[in-house]
Length: 217
Image (cartoon, rainbow, N blue to C red):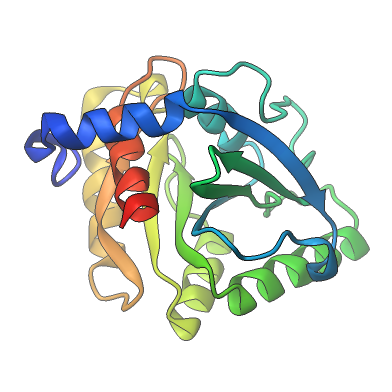
């Protein structure tokens, strides 16, 4: 099975830093419905973006080892705000509204899209966007649209393939290779792709260590 590009080279020290960061106090802060309600940009921020039902809430809960911290739902499109989590006064983690859910009203979609765009374009403390892609389906048109937007504004993003426990190893290899080729020439894309499963806890050490390197740098 294809592994993340640097998965085998992650040092024990890096893994430990990631574990310690997410073992500290983690609290839900607020749900922002406009830029005016965002917290002050006093800490570095990372955010999770992705299509509805890609597993953002489940991944946040798995990363922090706290069930129910982020609201996971079987109903796509439930996250309609910018949900902020405070990691021990060292880092803000932001759960962005899911996109690509056709059954949402056009007015709701327009409102969520506007809020997300304004946040991504104007948040100086934002260090990286982790763009979640369901490994069962690969990238969709809405994912490409977000990549284009991030490339245009030079906001660094990194692909995280989710739910790798749901498909066979050869299928994981295929989606990994295809996604790597897709981002190869994209200026704002971070080259390393992280493979994860919230249910099986796969890839979480790498993701934690990556986030810790951003928070502590």
